[in-house]
Amino acid sequence: MSTSEQLADTYLKGAADLRAAVAGMTRDQLTARPVPGRWSTLEVICHIADFEAVLAERMKRIIALGDNPLLLVADENLFLEKLRYHDRDAEEELALIDATRKQMARIIRRLTPDQLQSTGVHSKKGLITLEKAIQTATNHVTHHLPFVAEKRKALGL
Image 1 (cartoon, helix red, strand yellow):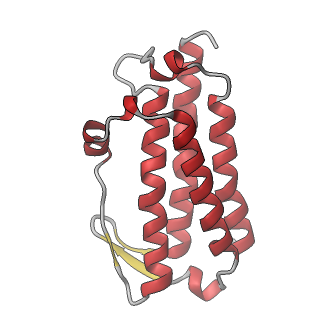
Image 2 (tube, rainbow, N blue to C red):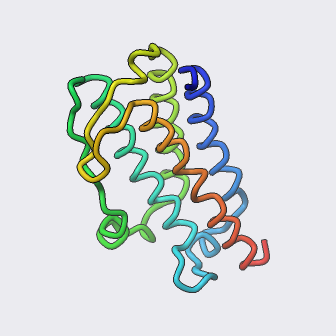
Image 3 (tube, helix red, strand yellow):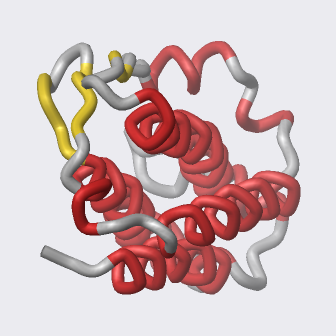
């Protein structure tokens, strides 16, 4: 089991890691799809920004509501299809990720060990602890970083 401080530090680091991964890319490079069948880098950024809100809301529901609140599933493909990712601004999306992670890291740092073991009921995955919800949010950026690196490589960056 991790401490609240460790969870917050690791969670917060994801925003900086994502910024570093996309640093120096032009709008054309961000919207390019150099790997067939894969999202563009901008689509990855927007996906992460949209799901930061979803994942933060899940954590907040467990913290604030107690008694196994319902945590709704979200469909990433519907978000991609309906939310016009290529019309969005990468810097705005990164700023949103930064702000969400800073806010949640401040909240996470104050959690007690007992709070970390509080649970919510995910509508698809079932019972999850707050600690697991934090780790899922943390790992979301880490999961997508290799895809950004793959696109950079394909673009010769």
